[in-house]
Image (cartoon, rainbow, N blue to C red; front, side, top):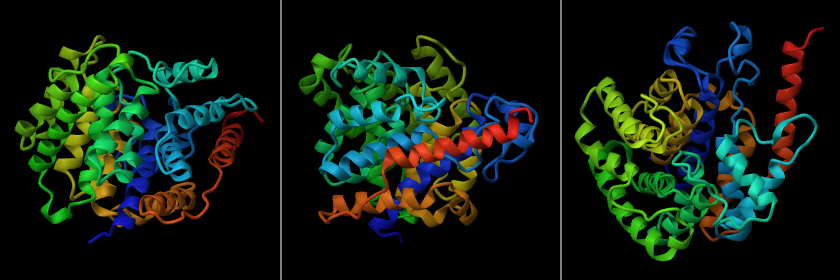
Length: 384
């Protein structure tokens, strides 16, 4: 039985491990990933035929984990989530250094980069979000679920403010709230007695509250009102009937739901569109809770937004089990594991009312990791 400190560790390890497992395969099709065999650990694509992300270091996480650590950093430093501090710090992380693509951030999407540019220009955090219905807020929401696990109202409000920084579409916001709520709920359960139907009921109840809060307290910042017919909520309401269905059927139904509700149909539930990918991560976390390693490998094998899918599910697995549920070699070979653990311990201390131990400078830490990745890339691929 994992204690609450171990569950904090599990969320941070699960996020980073899932992110690092999926990072080399981001954007690939399932049939392309199948050529590499089973995903039983961190894959080094530099030894394989040319692929899109052959330069990524095996075992190194991307922006999914970096921004999760940034959310934790604001909570640790201030004892609450501050969207202003989050935005200012993200600008620092994305500032041009050397020849890095986007500062020290690795793998950021266009939606996030557009919001960062608005922050640079002085736009307020509650006006800087775009129309995106993507999973970018959900992927970084886990620390808020941990920090406010005993206060659902604060959890919802703080997650909304985190999401508004980049998403003014209620769909992306509600997906982030669902991820934070599920992480919080899992910290109160034991693996042997975890009931997926009960979890979904709790999520739907929480989203009812979130819709009301959004429309009463945050309506001026939304591009449109939040409703019960929201594509993410509508999809979540269908999940209880799908829990016992074969995986292939659920993938098909989630893909159909994503196609029917997205402005840009994809045919797959593994894109960045939240009513596909976040629902798939939730389904996986609830139906495969006893085999997180196989579940994360399965998610990566599906292609698409592989790092975010596995990071979101990994956070939920970690909240339920603690870190020991992940294979030892995955924990041992995860780059920067000690610092990831330090942030988990500091967030737990802050949430418990204790004085947290100092954490490594996020900017310096991520600069060093990005510089290492670039150095390794040059040594592998530049002509001698």
